[in-house]
Amino acid sequence: MTTSSFVDGSEAIQDSMAQVLELSPVESHLHPEGSFDLADHEVPTGREEIWRFTPLKRLRQLHQETPLDGTDFAIKVDAAPGVTAVSVPVADSARGVSGYIPVDRVSARAWAAAQSVLEITIPAEAEIAEPTTVVLTGAGIENAAAGHLLVRAGRFSKSVVIVDYNGSATWAENIEVVLEDGAELTFVTVQDWNDDSVHVVTQHARVGRDATFKHVAVSLGGDVVRASTSADYIGTGGSVEMLGVYFADAGQHIEHRLFADHTAPKTKSDVLYKGALQGEGAHTVWIGNVLIRKEAQGIDTFEQNDNLVLTDGAMADSVPNLEIETGDIEGAGHASTTGRFDDQHLFYLQSRGIPAEEARRLVVHGFFNDIIRRIGVPSLQERLTASIEDELAEHVGRLEL
Amino acid sequence: MSFVEAAKLADVPDGGALAVEIDGQEVALVRAGDDVYAIRDECSHASIPLSEGDVEGCEIECWLHGSRFDLRTGKPLNMPATEPVPTYPTQITGDVVMIDLSADRS
Image (cartoon, rainbow over the protein chains, first blue to last red):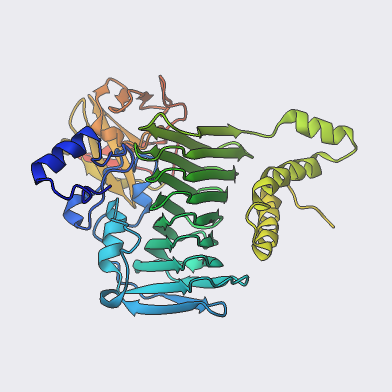
């Protein structure tokens, strides 16, 4: 909020008016104000609220001092016709345009260390069905590296951007997404890393008036993946849908932290993350948070996380949060479930003559299909269904066709 | 069996714990009179170093949430921890504490 409308007032009057109207920023307990200055981000001990679920010992010092100057990776960009994708030096880049300010130490370090910014720009009013893809392939975990991606969707454009991670890397990253008024963007990240990769990524989206942002996170690979994703709004009518699909195997730590910051009236957010876990030491973390600020009247929000624990030894942490500063809201809610196979589902399927193993597969596919069909990118949907089938082969059994 | 040197006996405080790292494994050495116990230096509940906790006889307490573990077996004696912490056999040779990390007794 700005106080510039008080044309005639002295600063003192402006301040007191701001106080009466409670215009001062509300601090979210999970998302303290950010800072570009590394000195403001102390090295976490692991007991901080925002770090307590993350296995710091396995982060390879990304949160401490390890240099982020590695170059053992390749980036391949395939821009759809009409979309521009260029890598520009940090000094010439438009980074920061989303209003993002690093909220944790890894993000602040990645911000300071990044040498260039990959800028993907979708021109205004362009309707581009073909996805723009960025494939990052890591070639080694020894030298940690930092990256920065900026995606800008021009007003009233429609487009899809997919970022695909594979190979082995120790990767710290900031991603900014800006949707101008009326833009529609589907932004997908696919974590298909080898089992030795560590990836800490912070993503922030700024959503313009009546813009529609669909964020899809697919997390399958990696030793430790920690993805923090936030969105705020600069105009009324903005809508954010965040979908997540994840599958953790033995020893994997997959953590998603979501934050919908309702900074404008009549905005929407809808978060749904579904994951399955299997094997000893498989650990998933889902932290959902929504802040409904005083000025964000008439908003509608829902967040949900479902976890399916397929074997013993796996652990799912799921913490939905809701911070509400206004009473005038359309809807606000959240839900979280963590459970094993439903014996009644299995019994029903078996009673129809379906073998136990096949019944378990069907239940898992049913669990995920509900979210996969909402992604709306056909090639990705097929790939995901196949990936889940591969994951299931390990513990639940593969269907012999 | 492969016992390796973990610490000098004199460095392990009686009734207290000493954190050491052997082959990348963090271990808490705990001395109770003439005996020295070795337990993985990480609570099975919230990954807190056990060596920072209080020792009472054959028990070590995680300071953050208060779970106590039996140093001989690694078993948790009270909530919130429910899973055991690995323990390792030790030997005292002269003034040196030896530990066998290959014999994880979890």
